Image 1 (tube, helix red, strand yellow):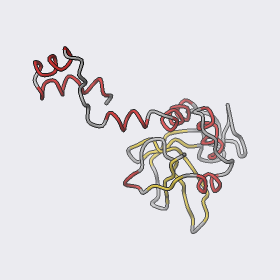
Image 2 (image 1 turned 60 degrees about the vertical axis):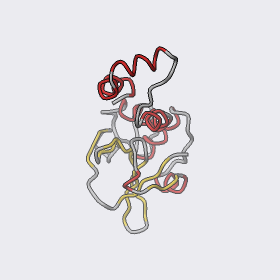
Image 3 (image 1 turned 120 degrees about the vertical axis):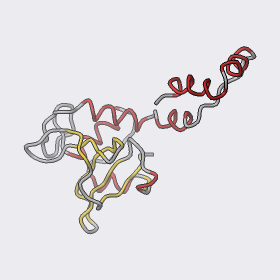
Image 4 (image 1 turned 45 degrees about the horizontal axis):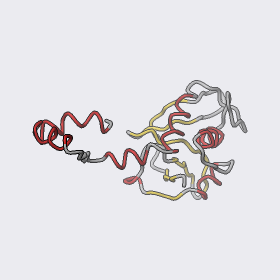
Length: 157
């Protein structure tokens, strides 16, 4: 929900007269969560939208777009188009991000899949336990539920 969508409910809670008075004297209405949403509307949100726009693009090992991707190729391409530089492989991308806990993850963070100490896959967190990713040979870029707990999260700086 955007800040503009919240204003009517805030006016209902605060009273229409209070909101109109505030507007008339040039004040602003503080909207809870709006600052964090505005901050998130940066490169990570753009990269998430770009990845989603590639839905259905075929997987190809080593491909970095714009029409075919492997997993890290999709994240590399999406963040590059959003103005951020990432290294080529999932493991290199893991080492380049600021690691965040599952409780602090947010849409646009990278999701890294591990087997032991080895990072073998990466996608972009879409929220609600789902990622945009390029899964494997014979598949296409798609939105999918995270299928394992052996993941960690990284925020692109």
